[in-house]
Amino acid sequence: MSESFPPSGFVKTKSAMSGIEVYMPRPPEEDGREVVDFRCPHCDGATAYSTDDGGLTCSFCGYHEAPQVEVVGKGAQDFEFTVETVERSTNGWGQERKELVCNSCASHITLSTEMLSHTCPFCGSNAVVQTRAPQDVLRPRFLVPFVTTTENCRQITAVWLQNSWMLPKDLQNLARSTEYTPIYIPFWTFDARTTALWRAEVYNTDANRRRHAAPNWKWERPLLLKLGNRDGNQWDWESGTVSHLTDDMLVSGSSQISTNLLKQMRGYRLGELVPYEATFLAGLSAQAYDVDLETAWERARKLMRAHTKAACQEQASARNMRNFSMNLDFSEESWRYILLPLYLATYRYGDKVFQVIINGQTGTIAGQRPVDWQKVGWTMAGTFLPALLFALVAALLLANEYEIGSLFGLLAGVSFIAWLVFVIDTLRKAGKMASA
Image (cartoon, rainbow, N blue to C red):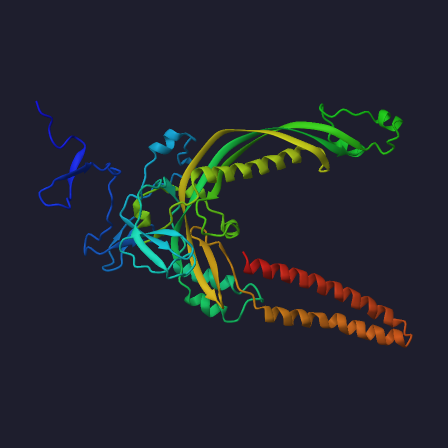
């Protein structure tokens, strides 16, 4: 009996020559989860996520669909570090999305299909290309919904720009016209228990030993006195065990936002995590992770090592130590891939681009701000005048042998020191503002 044609697993495809049939291997089936299209049931217009109550709202006819959200918070499921776990994880966004690729900063942002955007939210460049969003990335399992609104962002930014005298005057006008992009940023969260055995030589005083007497510290004051150590101070070997549980350590899955800015803006309440649904991304931007699980886990382990080492050193009887060693084990390791909300604003001042981010849940702001160096220079010069004036008066009085000249000399010295402290502090703050 002849074998059927075409063979199983092959499908017909387009042929470049007439009369010739061409077959190709059947493409793999895509993720079976339904791809959702968010359309208004009344007017067929596109609906978008509403930050007011978390539902879907149609911007054309006003139709509103109330949210149905189950808050899982800290009970959100964790995953073990196994190949099988990653392979079983669902891929894709659960809805048709397009991807915005920036040719300037190389960022990749996904958008709802109905969104029209030709500007990169990370660097403000218009050199972008739109493609179909890939569905081969891990799907987030949980997210924190947006609570802060765009109007809240403008108010928060206006207050933030008023809390420093070093900023240019026209920056407030720029803040009112800046566009804020609501975007979900990828984060990895990690749980782990670290158990450490440590040993070190600790410089102990006699009084310190009395306060921290313990079985693993052996000392005899008479012996120390006999050896000539009259104050009873010496290096003692100490050891101990530390067990520390880390819960929900956040590591950013995005390389496009400054780590310093994220540290300043953090404070997400992970107790308000909800299961991921494509509804939350309707009309909003989102970024797929470009920092993979392995890289993020190594960063988390490095931070956990540092925290555990600090806990070990805290356990010692004194801070002055040498020859410190630590054996560290990790256990109960687990991870989650989540999305966290933030507003991103990019503005240009002069020839530089500055980035501002606002926590989409709590409204905490962090960002880069230009410094009016001319204003800073004039202020420094003005605050130097009292010291200069006191110095001139002191010189005149001392030249004429007036004893009060010594007092003015002292005032000049104090004023100069105060001015120097002011200058150092101002330069430190200015540098931090511009390079956050």
